Length: 116
Image 1 (cartoon, helix red, strand yellow):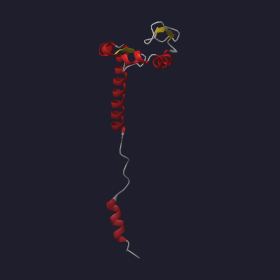
Image 2 (image 1 turned 180 degrees about the vertical axis):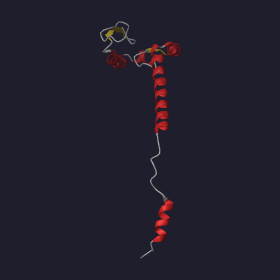
Image 3 (image 1 turned 180 degrees about the horizontal axis):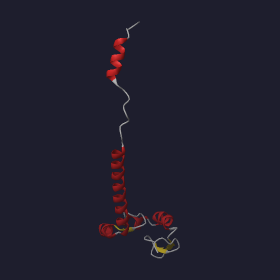
Image 4 (image 1 turned 60 degrees about the vertical axis):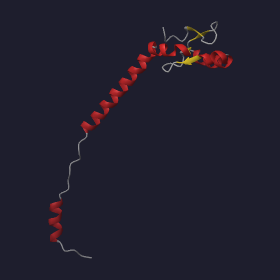
């Protein structure tokens, strides 16, 4: 299960390290500092910072990354929701009723004399 925080994950910096999924992000930061030479050879997936792959394999990983689909679906959902909100906001707006009658006001003013 991907959501299990106790699931063991292999460290990309040292193959002998097996870390619980809940601690994995912290371990990556620590191991990156401990293994700078290995860190130079690895690239971070743009869809999930926990995915560290050899730089030569990054484009292949990006095409196959499971998290890409999740992120793309979120973008589509947000985009559709934003458009729907815009359409609803525009279609629901009604101008306020106008209570002014300029012609009757002009007639009323013409009957009364102007006084300083």
